[in-house]
Amino acid sequence: MASKLAGLTRREFIRAGGAVLTLLVMPLARAAAPTLIGVRVWPAPDYTRVTIEHDQPLEFRQMMLKDPDRLVLDLEGVEFNSVLASLPGKILDDDPQIKLIRAGRFKPGVVRIVIELKGEVKPQLFALKPIGSYGHRLVIDLYPAVPPDPLLALLEKRAQDDPFAPADPATTADRKPRAEVSDITRLVTVVIDPGHGGEDPGAIGAGGSREKEVTLAIARRLKAKIDAQPNMRALLTRDGDYFIPLHQRVAKARRVKADLFVSVHADAFMKPTARGSSVFVLSENGASSSAARWLADRENAADLIGGVNLGNKDPHLARTLLDLSQTATINDSFKLARAVLNEIGGINDLHKGHVEQAGFAVLKAPDIPSILVETAFISNPEEEKRLTDEAYQNQMAEALLAGMKRYFAQNPPAAKSKLAKLY
Image (cartoon, rainbow, N blue to C red; front, side, top):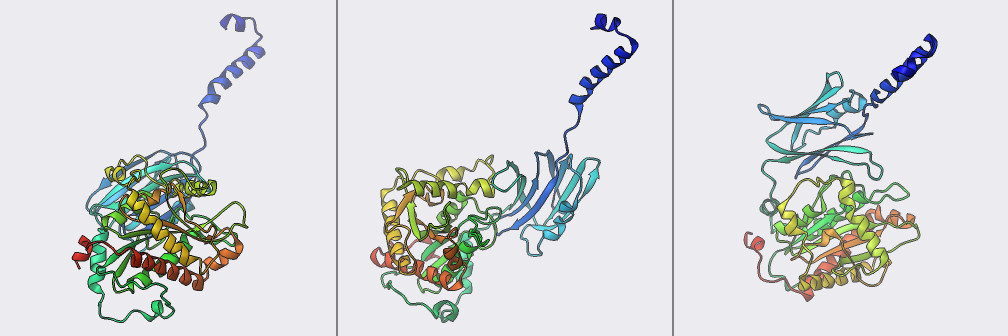
């Protein structure tokens, strides 16, 4: 190259040098810094989640400090903006894990977030790639050092209740039992699973209704009705707007030795004309229809949307999400599903007149009869209005309870569980 430059005029040499300089400098140009576009806080009894959404990957460093307990998080290559300025105001006084959050410019190109804690926690931080309507997300999960015990929560609730007090009229005034259960001689436990929650809204209707809110409303009504029964008690996998991974929903049911597991959802399809209620059980050998397979794939994607730490190797997960091979459990699930489907048919059209099957991850408890109920199509404008109507929500809860009672009338529970003995 030197020989070529030797024969150039001064002006040509400067031009050539400028071209070389440009080639050397352009690859060193710095990429645009990540921009923070949203922060969200989801407090829950099990853990508190903080989600930081940004438009491209970012680097971060973390450290735990004591006296007081706090998590310090440094975001590299980020400028402080109004999104971070809003973070302190998102912390509720009753947040079980977080006392307060501070955020500010630590040094040029670094933003520091300090999360002051109410006690010792085990933090899990992980990044999520864009999916659905979300961009990149940095997730901060703050788990208490001593996890809450759902069994203990049930026992405390039982101790607070007066077993001789009359049932709440608000939950019993409109009750018209369609099946009596005289053979239940012990307390039975039903775990109710409101689908979706937190970062995962579930399906969204044309009117803006979100599946996660509909399912929680119906689940709360169902829990109240079950708890009003003298021989039944219910536990919700979530009782607020927060995300619970699918395997943890199953694990909760197993920890309290549940007799039944009922997952509540609101269906959606690409065409708004689809309508009707459905009941599903787990399939060992493929879905009962292509639509059932599509629905199971969509529901199983909740972990991707809600955000699961795939790097967390939980040994309990391997034991929980076994391929369900116990034929007896599947048979019991079918019996429960048929009883519930029969009752639901009295308040709404059925999408199909039989129980369907698909590989729903949330139905994989190997020892608990489990069903997934699609209460109606939230993607159908007419059914969306019904799903947000309190009267319909109440009717659906009544139908689900009646189906359970019908199931127990025909399949009395086995000998007392350890849970019942503790009462």
